Length: 307
Ligand SMILES: NC(=O)c1ccc[n+]([C@@H]2O[C@H](COP(=O)([O-])OP(=O)(O)OC[C@H]3O[C@@H](n4cnc5c(N)ncnc54)[C@H](OP(=O)(O)O)[C@@H]3O)[C@@H](O)[C@H]2O)c1
Image 1 (tube, rainbow, N blue to C red):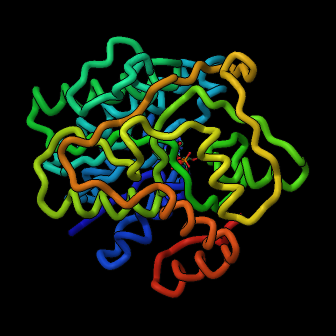
Image 2 (cartoon, helix red, strand yellow; image 1 turned 90 degrees about the horizontal axis):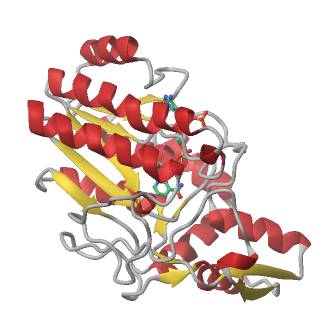
Image 3 (cartoon, rainbow, N blue to C red; image 1 turned 135 degrees about the vertical axis):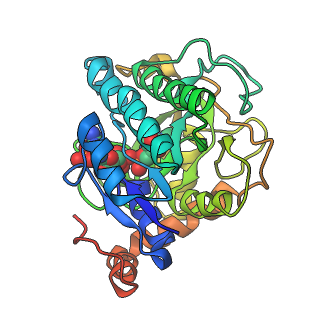
């Protein structure tokens, strides 16, 4: 397998780099290839000739996207056209990730893979929806083969300090260092996803599943879990005494709206392990991040030192 991983320095990109280490993938992040540059994308992909392109590059600052929607569209939307066209021209298989935020979050039953999302909940979701459309269109028009993998509430090891928060577990742990009480919304429901499990499942999909749309998250009950329940479990499993107090979305306004119900229903794949089990493993990793990151170097994954 000749594999190219884009966004290789992001949360998911790192775990993909590790998960595919035995096939020695090309690991590119923005300094190696800016996916918004159509000309360069076309020429670099033509030159590298990957059989599989895994795109974990994205604009992920959900709140900031409200004030710079064009920038979010450039990276999450238009860049997908570049990648989809370059992949179909070279015959590469494209793996791309999207989000529960492409839906409006009003459906209590959650969303299946084939459900149409008429309106995204926020600008970030709208930009990811645009990317989905380019991908699907290239499949219909020019026979691009792809996996469109929607996921939600992603958590995993951060390699460097991000300007924005995109890992809820770390945010809660950080707050618990300075506060006796944390208020967390208890009226938004979804499904958490450990980046390591998502990387592994990507590999499973590539082992022979049909191209198309998949929903990949860790398992929860049918209704999902609330952010409050998620936070409570983080505190409980990390042995802290911080009080977690439920509140409403109304009491905790954010620049970008969040969906009330965003359970991604998986009707195509074997369920992944329960979210509590995945979270417990991540919290173990947090106790000794150097050891976790050392694995990468020991096993020959070309990488820099975590921040
Ligand atoms: N995080 C979540 O909760 C969540 C939930 C649902 C779905 N997802 C999706 O899952 C995927 C992976 O997310 P993640 O949290 O791992 O993202 P992440 O940690 O923000 O990583 C994204 C990577 O892409 C890079 N990048 C940004 N713009 C680029 C460009 N123009 N060209 C090339 N690379 C660029 C980023 O570099 P910089 O850091 O330098 O910008 C970063 O290294 C994304 O598709 C995301 O939309 C994430």
